[in-house]
Length: 313
Image (tube, rainbow, N blue to C red; front, side):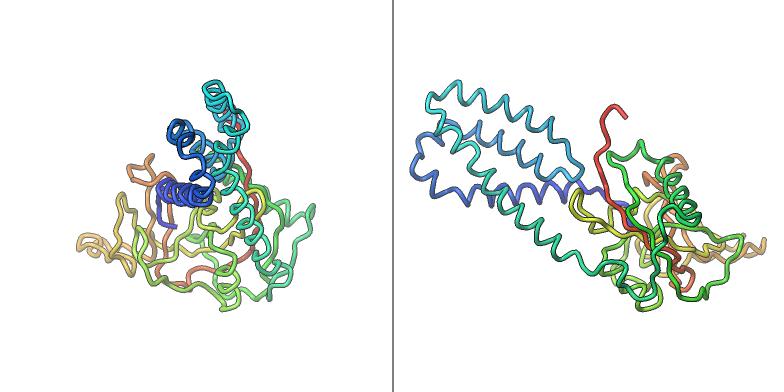
């Protein structure tokens, strides 16, 4: 879960879909080229707003469509043929909307097998003491950083890993969250643990964790409001951690001790912590990285769904 800004990816996706939408209605535009030429600026602005509403992952529909309504009123005021205005204004967006709806339906149908059918999982009943304990821990972890994110997470179901625990717990270990795609989460459970990635993240080729579920959510394939995402709650033996203020993409193992640390008999480093801005680092939320997959063990699988956070919250 190396820190990254999702905005450029979302912008590229929005532009790609906008181009596709316009291509879908080019035959219609050919019949009324003069109209399009006179109003192309208004059309572009309105479609950009509508596409922003479609693609905004956490939703701000009233704002987008409120502005869109103003733009539409300007077009209608400058063009007496209201029917033509409606067709050519909403043509690209409606074409995009149909394709977008089909894609979302496909994602729902391809959501994968339900957690109840995964090997080695047992559902924890809502309302039980165990469920309330994990739910409370989850909510507390979200609340600490809620002001930094424009969405909320909701715990839909909780499943316990039933395999015997092989990792010995110590005082230097803690529970952390790991966000990943549903298929990858299932593979981690079926294969008995994590494996190191082929491509380096911000702190090299390690397994990344966070103490904030909101951060880990960015690496799931959950898509509000129709698709839930899964997140792994793991026990991670961090040992002696080395703090980093900036990226170190070349790491493939924990950093070595300096000569003076060796002289002082400082313990060997077993993990890396990427510091957040409040600690002088570059990250919005701290990250925890291990380079030996055997230092982490999955305890629970959380099924989550996101929703928008109101601006006044």
